[in-house]
Structures are given as structure tokens and as C-alpha cells.
Image (cartoon, rainbow, N blue to C red):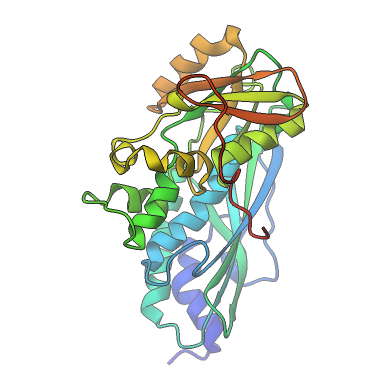
Length: 318
């Protein structure tokens, strides 16, 4: 029998195998490491709460992957590469050891896939739902971070992948929308962070689409001091999203959990940007452009008239 207190035995059993250089085997108060020479440090953090960001019966391994991948998507939007992460896990006291084993296994798979490792963190008990937080550190060439503030009138508005799958996937996972192949629910549970797509010299601004396309493009507009137009007919939707019907188009435009990228691309860079994304195996689509005017987003229907949307996107406090 281990002479370690239960919490530390759990950490040793499930999280120590995930620790990378600088984590000091998770036996000290903090990690110690040196960023790669000649690189700027990039830091992001996201939290996930059971019943809000994932369903209570979602497999722990998929929950772990979603937690890591939502943070990776933030780094992807800035053109940064991952380095290591800090993790906080708060779970009810009666959480079985098998949950931790599955959670750690999911992290281990994605650590190998994305080249990142655990630096440290904390584990606590809570009377409420599972609450998770992850802080991800990454690096980028000095001055090379892609910011939200660089879009200019005349730049094209581009997105990666398909839009709307995350919001429709939540409905599917809840049994409120037919999803015969499971494609939509999988897209909700397992984001695909679009690493190595956003690059200075190819894109002038960018962010990840996590709270809804229209709302997040609005953030780009406010940071850049210009407006944007979105042609709804050009917004890429998966076959499963189109099969749901046109009545779901407003939700696709405003729903969250896509974790695709919205990017401003100068016209002179469009061909090189397409070639770069194609080389990375990621589809990109021009859905509109940035225009002069007060910050805001106008969505146009197929006939060119403005679309009235019930909301702009997701908010935790609205």
C-alpha cells in the first residue's frame, strides 16, 4: 500500500506519466523551464464545466481532449506552437478511479498528437459538477503573433473547415436532432484545432470561432476598427449540417463550439494562403470581406438583403 495521501497517489498514478520537461515529476510547488531561445511566449486559458461545456455522460477521455483542444485553437488563431500546459481538475469526491484513468488516457493521446506535455496543476474536490481549467503555454517567432487588430478594409474574410457543426452537434448529442452517422455529435465533443494555418505574411488578423461566427467576427471588427460583410450562401457547412435543413442556418451562423478560425486575408496573399492551407490538409473558404465603417457585422442572404438573426452568438452572462 502506498504511503502517499490519496490525492498525491492519484496524481502519481494518472498525471505523473503525462509530465514533461520542467514539470519536475510533479513533485515540486511549480514548474521550472526555459522557453526555446528566440521565441515569444504565448499564454491562454479556458475553463469547462459539466453541463455547460460538455454533457454529464460524455466519456472522460473526450472531455480531456476537448479541454486541451479548445486551448490549442486559441494558439492556432495566433499562429503559435504549443509548449506545455497547467491543469486544474475539480471533481466530486465519489468520482471513480476509472474516470481519471480515461481522462489521463485522452490527454496522453492528444499530447502525442500535438507535441505538448503537462507542466503541473492542481486537483480538488467539489460538491458541484466537474469543473476543469487548462492554461496552455505556446511560442511564436518574435513579433510574429497573429492578432485580432490587423484586419483592413479590402481584406477577405476566410474561415477554415465548416461552420455550425458544433452547435448542431450539441442538439444531436442531446437527442434533439437526427444525426444518423454521429458526425455532428463528434464535432461537438472533439474540436479539430487548425494548427499551422494562421501565419503573418499570409493573414493580417484572426481568431478562433468558439462563441459563434457572427459574434467572433464582430470581435475582429472591434479590434481592427472596421466592419465586415458575411455572405451567408458562402459559409461552408458540412453535408450533415445541410441535411438538417435551412431552418438551422441562423444557428450555424451564431452557435458556438466550432473551433474553426476566422481570418483576414489581404487579396495579394489569397493564392499563397490557399496553397498553404491545402498543404496542411485544411479546407478554407472566403465568406465575405472587411469594409470601411463603424465596427459591426452585416450578414447577407442569398439575394443580397440583410439577414435578421435572433442573436449574435453565445454568452455565459446574457
